[in-house]
Image 1 (cartoon, rainbow, N blue to C red):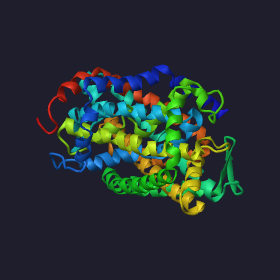
Image 2: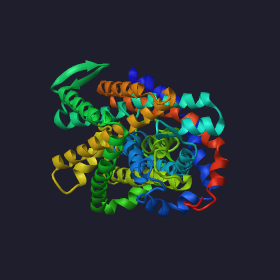
Image 3: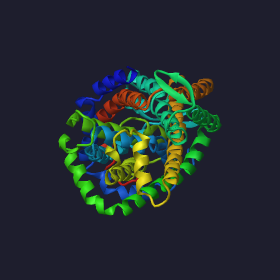
Image 4: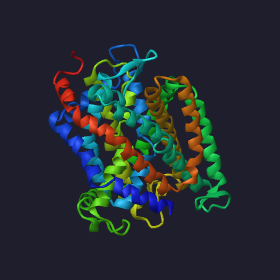
Amino acid sequence: MQDLLLARVGEAVWGWPMMALFLGTGIWYMLRLRGLPLRRLGQALRAIFRGGESADGISPYAALCTALAATIGTGNIVGVATALAAGGPGALLWMMVAALFGMATQYAEGYLAVRYRRRQGGKWLGGPFCYIEQGLGWRWLAVTFAVVGAAVGLLGVGTVAQVNSITTAVEGFFDPLKRSVAMTAGGNAVTWAAVIAGGLTVLFSAMVLLGGADRISRVCSLVVPLMSAVYVLCSVLILVRCRAQIPAALRLIAVSAFSPRAAAGAAGGLTMRRILRMGIGRGVFTNEAGLGSTPIAAACSSNEDPVRQGLVTMTGTFLDTIVICSLTGLCLVVTGAWCVPGLAGFRITEQAWRTALPWPAGLSSFLLLACLVFFAFSTIIGWNFYGEQCLRYLTGGSQRAQRLYRWCYLAALCTAPLLSVKAAWELADILNACMALPNLTALLLLWRQVVEGSRRPAGKT
């Protein structure tokens, strides 16, 4: 009943208007910027490792890692798998299309974040709530975004989906038959393996989160590159070993994107709307382009040039979706794991790793589990940072409110295993849409500032 209700709400929220809004915003900016995100992608990737123009704030690299920590998460493993299982291989193509134009959206978000940020308590504060209030003069919409943003951190992307994915994966590895049931909630049997995994996640999260924003950025700068490298290397190895199947996989992806019948292994009742929703919706979940979260981290950068920060910010979508998600999706198609009956979420990607990597299947499962845990953990701490920044805006920088939010955040982590995988992801999708609406509205209304300010070379004032 719980899953069915959330699924119906999710289908209603992620209708044609929402998908058109996300894609349309990216297309509009790509056209108005005359393809700037594509033309200057190389410059943007080089700018990641260069210092900003000021020693004030965290480095552009640390700001990007904080943003990537929140975006490179279970969406890259579980999200892509659920998208292909529910929407067929064609969903991967639409995920890439959304990400391509999403780079333009994230460029605009990074630009506006630095242009409209402000000082609070000696530290930078910025993001959609600032450019909505200062750029449009609509404080009511800025407050709406901040309230929803804090709620998304507590109940959506940051907690529920991540911890649920961790506990489900750990349970599947250590107790797949659910022999040691600890409790039953909402019709779901929760094993001791899931309880212990959830408890350890809360413990390690508390050790980082209670250290504040500086510790969060330091941890992200270390964990994100390491975990991404391991995952990418294993994915590339799968593709090398299955290289003979790549041409057929690419044809299937292309045909399935426009023909539901071509995705014979997908769930029954597949429609073009379902394919688009899985591709665009899961793409937004993974790279967060247009969601409004990434500019919150960008505003804390030491970069004083909005153009340069916009370029650095947009590389998050490129690395997260166009590189990592495409590798995941292609691995699932070449191995046929996407359409194996009886598999869902993490188990789909696990099937690809177990069958295609050159070492024992148990080791492959453990490596993927480790990647998932680190991916999810980094997303947990990244989204706590976003939620606290929203709260800083709402409360005028109250330290007491931020401390209370951290404890509420940790408490929310404890409830995640009680939801099913499907319910957790549907809830995250619904909250994503609610958060994106105010941000996309502001982006469409502030396009002139972005376009006119981007006509000069990055780094020139």
